[in-house]
Amino acid sequence: KSILVNGLPSSLFGSTDAIISHFSKFGKIERVVADPIGIKPTRKGTKIGGLGLAGVRALITFQKANDATDALFETDTSVLGGSRMCATMHKSKFCPDYLKGKS
Image: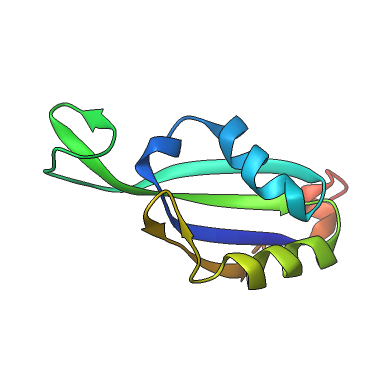
């Protein structure tokens, strides 16, 4: 019930509210974790020490698996803020009982 979205615009770095706002049209979101993809010298994008972010990736966990699937098909290869996104389903390497604290 999670998707990993690469290629989000660098303007979304540090703004999980904006990511939630965009993806909540697919369903209720439980959690968003966003990271910068990489840093490259540029005059565009968010500035960090004179360098700009290449983009942002986000792990978005939906309450329902069907919502994640809908978001995946709608998002993969679509464009947001001038950035082409790539989405894949994400599977945790941890067993569900471990994640729920029952191990």
